[in-house]
Length: 307
Length: 307
Image (cartoon, rainbow over all chains, first blue to last red; front, top):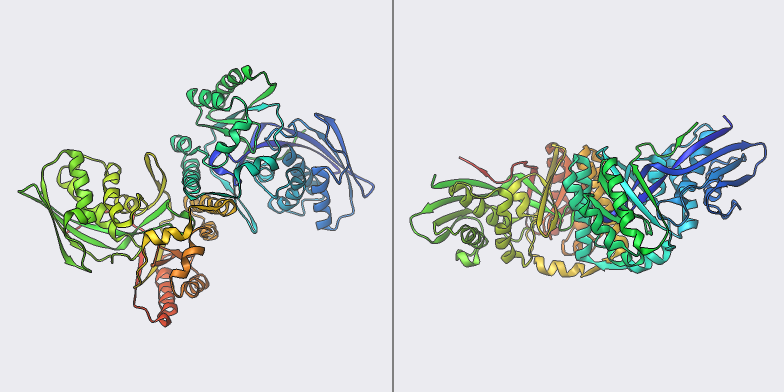
């Protein structure tokens, strides 16, 4: 095999009470990549679709991730990475993570899978780091591994695939606004009140227990963010109106995807997600800002080969 | 029925990564109470065993809890509460919680159970508050309800009974030292570094996922405390020596019970807990401080009627 075509899912991280530790992979939203083994020893990157991204492998997350993997393996093979970038950069649903994870997953496949998917994580994180100025796995891990994941810790990296009810689905609004992840982090500060931290870990515990037992009411009660949302929601016009609409319409919870500007409503069933998505679109439209609406189930598999 | 004899289990709260939100009930360690409905309308408290406790119902956690319940019910009945106090006050394994929870549970039974066990919680917490200067449920909830519980939140109080592997058992060392809960809390401070908070909720998530799936390795990796233990361990002589001994001897984790001075080792199986308990006792003995050693499984039931 010297060519592989893959789907690299968009991902939603943070998920209200799961700041920096939770992420999930979407089923219907993602990039496509075609990776070809070449006769040379270079990496080349080409783009066939979507907003312009850097094509210099040293400045492209896919290129940086691929180089990290190849150096680790001592490989001198060359690859051409062709990206159909359907997840808009800066959307807050894991655009850079999809490129980073896709590059290492695809190349690993073409090399006969010398590494496990978990072993690919640090290499994908290396690429992700140049896009977000932070060493984090809450988008690359669900993109690579699929499902609903917990990043238990980073030293060493420990990613847990959580049990979750298979009827969960999301509606996502991506307002076409620019929010820099690094700036967004400074809003939260280096210290937080202990009482907010305790409230947050109570809710995170409730969410994981609810996901494991399939208790949708508990999931819903637990989807509260005491840490990031109160600071960041002001960056997103119409946030409160959308949140009210989502909860009124029966979503289990509503919050910021990653560091925004995308917002998500977690729902029981794709039909409910589509209904809530339409309500969110209606609620956001008066802002006069262009946006995309996505509705999707959670995909258990992560990156996968497509025809 | 005008008399009830009950066992009120000792409880271990905090449990490393679960500061203020986790607690569990022990099987073999606890107080006994006999509660009698009397012909008058007064509360009386008597003690048959253990270190002296206040017998004035207005200054006794059992009395205060009982009064809160009776006022709520509009009951003018009188009760005599006889306490065999086997859990030493100030030990950090829920001595006051056992009295508070036992009083309301027993009286509720004698009145024909007008309230559910969950509905008894706020009344038990009212009594617990006079002992610890804090409104918390992480001892009274597991004492009342049994098992391994998560306090998801307080507004309103939301207690979740977690799934957990039935082979879990604990070894507990209670050094005879006095640590005031309120003083111990000030050591932690009102604000904590965000990175420690994130590490803590990653571990709490891992612990709950591990408990739910019966993954003992994940439970073990998650039993890390980035918040309270680093500040409080210096209050307990020999803490590091005991921790090293516990981990070396195969405990899943080791930490401070509540705000101390008791420490616990969580183990797989009661035989392992007994083995680790002996090692802990050996490691603590050179401190020259009297101590008790307890080994116990987790009890799923909480307070229960005994013959």
